[in-house]
Image (tube, rainbow, N blue to C red; front, side, top):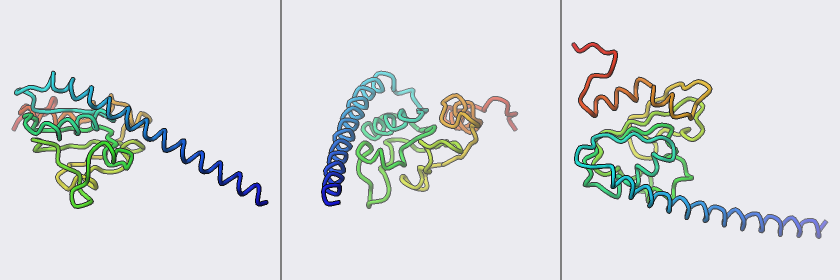
Length: 175
């Protein structure tokens, strides 16, 4: 029995070491991706940009870019199916303020987070991590919980973008 326990202990140590290396490699790859995407964002975000809409991992990249560029004139951030509240993003999004609230993204005045029932990537509301200023909205995307199209077609997404651009959402009659 002792030999078995020793083998299991060595196996456990090996698995933990492999997991640690995999997590480290993933973190390096994610940082490289975010640096590349930050360069791309700098090329497309200009003085006329008022709203950024980002889905899934794009919400992490957009959040970091907005935090790194508080001078950008982005008024509204709309995140769709965002994993930003997940502990898996801890090493990517920076430290928490007072150990509980994440930094607010740059010049953003309004942050609408749309998450769907059954979307594992967006299981946690962002207000839990970034404070009550985040407007968390739960939608039902049916069997395509994490797919971008249902998120983009959600009324709340269109309304947030329309409000940021100062236009009436389609289908609404002005009063």
